[in-house]
Length: 72
Image (cartoon, rainbow, N blue to C red; front, side, top):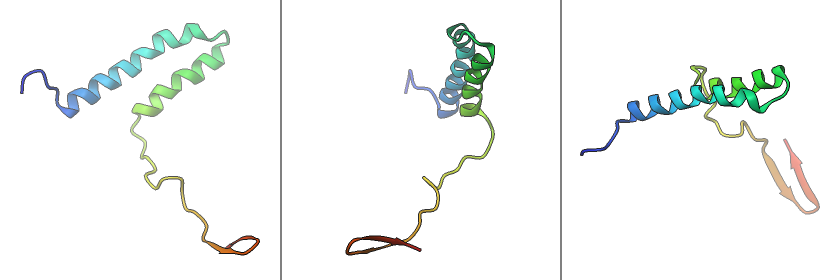
């Protein structure tokens, strides 16, 4: 398979590109604190913090009844 990249190579390239976005994000904002906040976003995407994989979190159980629902 010529021209194919491994998953690891692809993820490394993606992470490198996200890091380089910081260089062009900063001039888009007029306030330094806003630019700093925007530069944190790519770090969050490529960071090593554990991710939540449970969707939107725990959902309450509902019993559907005539006239609305009751949450338990």
